[in-house]
Amino acid sequence: MSATKRITPFETAPLERLASAAKPVAVPDRAPNLRVEPLLRDTQPRRFARVPTHAIGVHPEHREYPRASLKLPMRLRSVNGVPEDFPITLVTRDISSTGVYFLCPKQLSIATRIELEIVLVSRPMGRGNVVIVTLAHVRRMEPAAMPGWYGIAALFDDLQFDRDDGVPSRFLIS
Image (cartoon, rainbow, N blue to C red; front, side, top):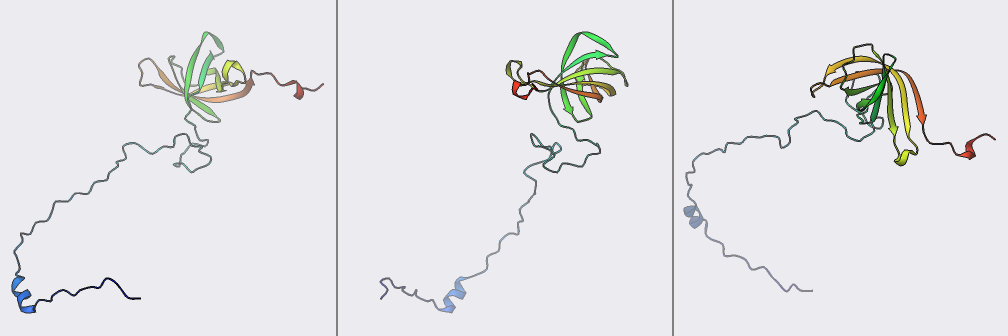
């Protein structure tokens, strides 16, 4: 096989002509002012959102039981054994297996015994709700960012899980 395209050599210039044509040119010495900045800045601590903390490692925490940032409906049913005339409906900020943190319009002192009802699972039309009914005591109280409200940390004393759906008859003992 023969090649159809061939390279034609360029005309080579004599070295004397190249040496005379290449004269050094004085270039002003300018160094650009460079500044290196990160594109993304950490303005807030890194957090996990919607990720099960048992499946991944999280920032080391000094708490014995990890907290889950969940906004669950909650009702304050009684304070110091006195039932509320109109139970206050609130929302949890975080919850663990041993306690809960929530915002409340009432100022509760430390060691106050309270009765809480926290809805864990809520299904439409009241079918299949799972509710924690617990006696707890206040461990910490701090003013919240909203005037007249307080952040309450309560430790569970007694937990009871209630379901409001009926047990199917096939599971009942005859």
